[in-house]
Length: 313
Image 1 (cartoon, one colour):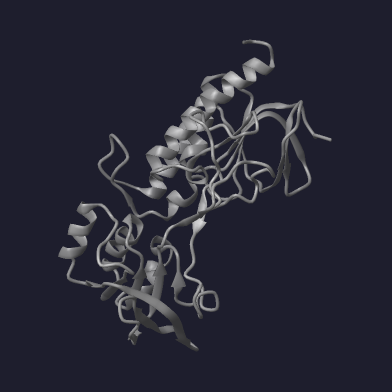
Image 2 (tube, helix red, strand yellow):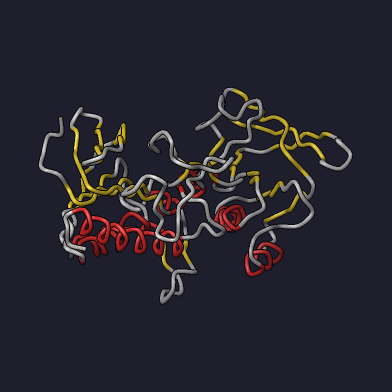
């Protein structure tokens, strides 16, 4: 049985989408709690600089994350630092189970659980994680000052992190499986003008090698002719996209083949009162600003849903 009186809304995840939803929920006078197991801002804290948040030419990811949480605090948003282990839809109320066994009842749930970095799935990747293999340049770049690193990927994140690493490392190689980047042109131009960065076109990693001190090389493979080569490096940074954190998505919820939740224009799933936003949701662009937009939309829709359940509409 639930351990407390029902909430109007429970938001699971404290990234840009979750905090935006919290702000709008508070403005709608919903009894709301945001539950986040980590630090406020989520993946945003792993971003060195944000240059596409409207109205702010440049801001660090951690600073923007702090501003989100501070803004929500102004409206009195309750934030609970716990891990959610289950979400169960119900006819009367939905329930959310925490890692300490506590069960919370709620009219509506917004799933804002985001995503996690995709892995290469090659020998040495898991074995040497934390010993030269990383998925966060801001977190680990300092350890590779004046060293050589390989970045894998060709999107915005890969190029942004390569430029950040170029401030620290003596040489940055970007291994990209195609002959052209998918990243925005402004990033491509910056990479082209950075003397410390060398691009390895049509290249994938086949294996990560290491010795007692950690990563010391990679085996590369040309995607056109299959030729392999060994490249000495001190570290490998992987930025090939994200996978949705859909472990809390209730059974029966519609998802696409890649595990992203399918929602309508209100971000509502096929289960009434359960919404999915941000990097968890199927959509074209996965950006901070679109996650925030989802949070706004879902919170407004949740407010209408709660009012309808309470007989107010």
